[in-house]
Length: 267
Image (cartoon, rainbow, N blue to C red; front, side):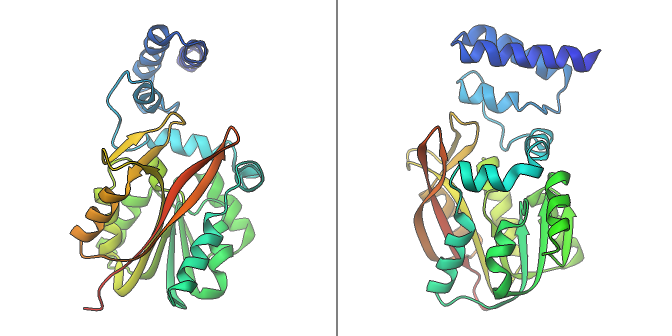
């Protein structure tokens, strides 16, 4: 019964939002949030994009997991063929152009179906993947690319690794920051799990330097370059490279982003 009411409220919100009836959409979305505070529909993100609520510091875990689980089997085709996603290969090119690698141990956060692992396979001796969506991890497991795979949220995984004193000389996150607004904890946790001289590389969607981060109309997060670089510098990371990239295409339009490469000092 609750699931039916939740679905009704969420679909009503979508219908009103698409029609431009934002007051009605807000009412329906808040009803959905009351029915399930874990927010599997991501209504807090939608409300923020509508200007009807403060943005959450990151997208709800239940929402991200459901979003990617429902597309896991066809994810590669959607992301690469339809949305023009090429960040993993660009990441490989930026690492090589800066004479970085080969690497002993790579951690791929938000590993999805293993696109980054395929791009970097010959540059890494051992590869670990972690993703919040179980369906995505299952697809990666079927490809038999990673040495270790985990179902876990990115920052939580890094914090757990700190307790186990695990570290990597390459940490990548090709489509993680668009689902995290406040990136302070993520960057700090990643820096702490790098070996001396280790490399952290990740992509973001671009935001002008007027603010640190915000929810975009496509219900993802964008970050300003000044914010990202300041947070990385705060935890001792050195910027090696930053490139302007097209993260993906939405409704035929390119979404601009940045690809960062940071390095932890040798000592």
